[in-house]
Image (cartoon, rainbow, N blue to C red; front, side, top):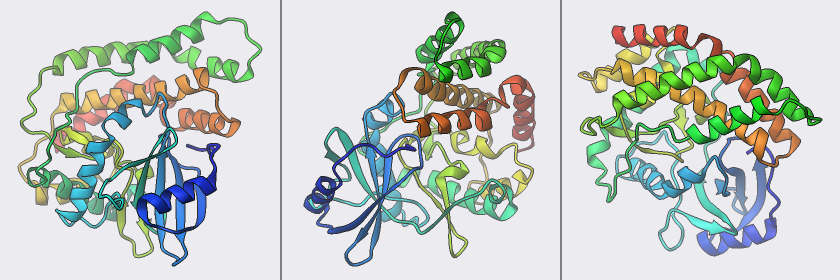
Length: 345
């Protein structure tokens, strides 16, 4: 969330004190992420925490329902499996991992002092080796967590109706004085054929993978992109944003890096820990198409239908321009590169 929600900060400080027995001195909004409103908390003792408020929205409606599971996984990975390089939720005085503030879900996390990994850093062999080791450790912890419930990744297009609604709205409206809408229409209209072709292909792959066994599923972070990784002052990486964790094929955490130039560094380190693992080519391709079209839907839906601050709209257009629009005309080309990487795994 790039713009700060309208809340009473004094009331929030009082709530934190009541729930966590933490006296808050400073509460600083941090304009990062897409799902939650984030704050850095500083106590009177100069200790820091990271606070996230998950307000109801289209983007996080599915994640919030399964947030309990995600928090429990992160908590157990840290306290049971002793994995240090991850964010983990702080317990309330009652031992809960989540509370509420007004209409938002409230979670307090440990604070990690560092910076988000840059694009350049994310492509280095050193970074890829460290990330591969961390992801492999997480995957290898699956059987030791003893989770009371199990949430599984499903091969279904949850954003289908929203995407088709957005495309219909963009195509149907020919006259408008809304500059934001006109800008979006200019961007999306030339790519409409590419989007629909990719969507049809995603539907085909989804049908082919339906009913796949959960037997080899592992605990996955599900979004270990560089934006969710912090590099601390000692050069160590930390995986954050444990908002959408569930059991999934290991490819769910790996495919992001398969087209990296230095993928051999990632592969060697991952296979040192999980040496017998082979990747499924069709799963990787499915995940690629799913992610690009899901991101496209998130941004254009928000621009079209949700009332937002101009800063948030600017951020959404930036996300489209950097992460989605360049890929849409060359999805097949990227698909072939991914297939080659899987075959070389």
